[in-house]
Image (cartoon, rainbow, N blue to C red; front, side, top):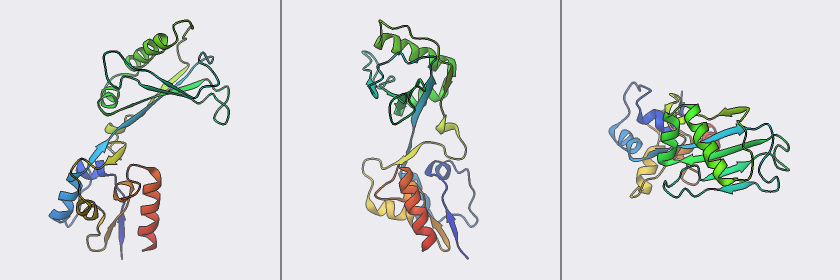
Length: 195
């Protein structure tokens, strides 16, 4: 009798799904008003931990490029994955799009250069494992999270989450309180299912 649509905003914006009958114009307008952002975590495992084991986060400020591999987090700490030798870097916005378009080798070489600059007195070995997702290219999501651009109104968001007949909408983008977060998707899906 009812259906719940939980496609990501990116899927809806890229018209990766066809609705029959088509969505009303007010709904399509609401979908187009929001942004999909990208947030890329680049995971590396090394043969040994060369960074301080009592530190979880490391920050890097490139002298020339804003957002160039600015945040590193160690998972090789107590209460995470001790002695795993795993470190990951986070990039967002333009840098995430750039990284997702280039090869793993290019990204790895750039990160190793940054790490060698951050730890000039240490031997930085080649990672034994290196990977990251390419969220903007994944046809089931087309981005990492939804975002309200400047000028977005509550009415636009209410239209984004509004039902169209017996088709209900849920997902992180429909959460006013937790858009962009996994628990926003969980709460919205739960509420739509209960309703």
